[in-house]
Image 1 (tube, rainbow, N blue to C red):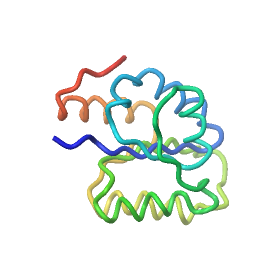
Image 2 (cartoon, rainbow, N blue to C red):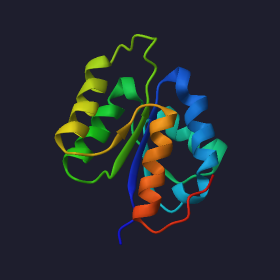
Image 3 (tube, rainbow, N blue to C red):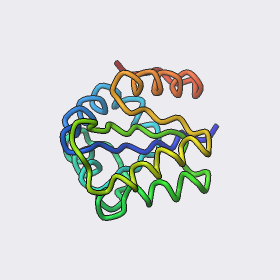
Length: 132
């Protein structure tokens, strides 16, 4: 069975949350192919020790790069911890990525609670023990 390919993205005020989430699930995530926007990916590499393919930073087109791979069928799931309280200058890119998830029926978790459920489902589907 192919390893899940998971995109990990977080707005600035959610980066600590995604790092903590990834650290809790390091055992499972280390069995997956991971891609992330630039700054988020850097933190996951440096602070959690995960192997992550880094795209550009979100405002520089990283969300769109992930969306393109998603549209090509190369992304299994997206964890996108969005900050709903802070306006984002690249909001159209964010909306395009979430829309691409809907169009291509790719699960997209936008908060930690839904991300926990998403990883539990992926772990069960792939016969892997979930770290937690």
